[in-house]
Length: 482
Image 1 (spheres, one colour):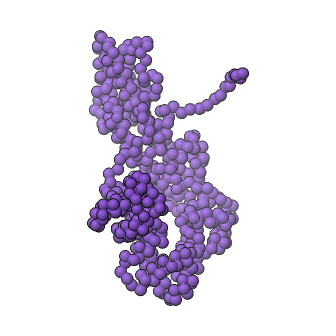
Image 2 (cartoon, helix red, strand yellow):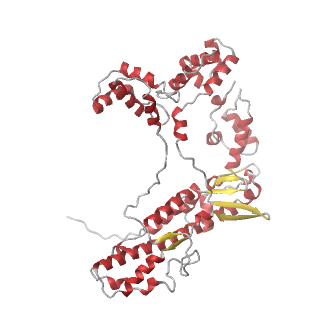
Image 3 (spheres, helix red, strand yellow):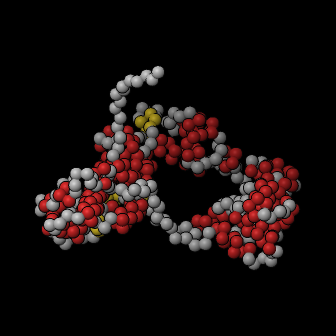
């Protein structure tokens, strides 16, 4: 027997317009420009530049309401539609395309890393089958330059996908040829082999020979920096070990990465905000590229008003009116959304600037106050998620360089004087201690904890270890140098 009951439930849902606005707020400047270009291309009723017409839309207009003399108010779209012919724009939001996924702008690039390797294979003489195996192997190399797949799996794939039956010895022989390709070290299965291949391709010298012995036979001791054991095992002097290590440090642990990075288009950070100090006061401005001149096309407004003069109402006219109205509504909404975005960005950044006023006036990181997203959200009366969208991907050009806004946020602790200080200050102090340590006897986390506690920061050892990792320093053993 079915059990039926009524349940009352309240839920909050964002409209498509609100979702699109949140996406616009999150976009950094360069991506915003791409989004603007795409919107202008897709909506002929939206135009960029400066409009000469008196009725043009500018930043001072309220885009939610039509202008007093707008031609759109002089025409009633309903006159062109029958009761049973409801247009799409009434049934769904018309400020987005049917395909509402995020589309990325294509990047122009040169030859891919794998193609670069395949081009080099043409300089070697292979039989047809061996050439196909070589190309398959190169195609299996990842963007860092490693062949991480097991050779037996590759042999199985060759049989199933290409009908090529071979053995592991034949594959290894071809792989040795691939190891001759540039950049040196490509095609290795792990770091040890990668470094070994690079050393074997260098001109032979005493230091290179020692480096090869270290990598080939004492790799584990080398990675753990057990230098005394290596000296005893290889019967070499400390100076000889130093020279060998210098040669190893010159090698590239990820040979493919250098090529991959060089083929990418250089991305320049364009700050969304600028903070200047004028007469000892902070002045905040939004990058003018954030506020382009957008307006609704006069041509489209005239097209809509033109239908008012028509006495006959055909089906094609109805469809045209619906299409034009959709595009005009979408253009108005987009202009309004851009204005709301810019207002939100300015409001949020001004609250951050005011909160960290002492830092922006002095540039001293010790003046950075503990600040979390909630602090700013409460100050501007917005949701934490909105502040997060502004902070995560935006940059500000300050008198002390271009900074990621997110970097101004940090937790706080109370020092021995009862003053709350930012964790940024503690990380900076920790970094300076490690940089000044004796590299032959680096400080352990216990020693770092004692030093940092003496400086007035009562934090635990595990916190010191976490901050050490966040500042990019490994454990003491791995920081050791001869």
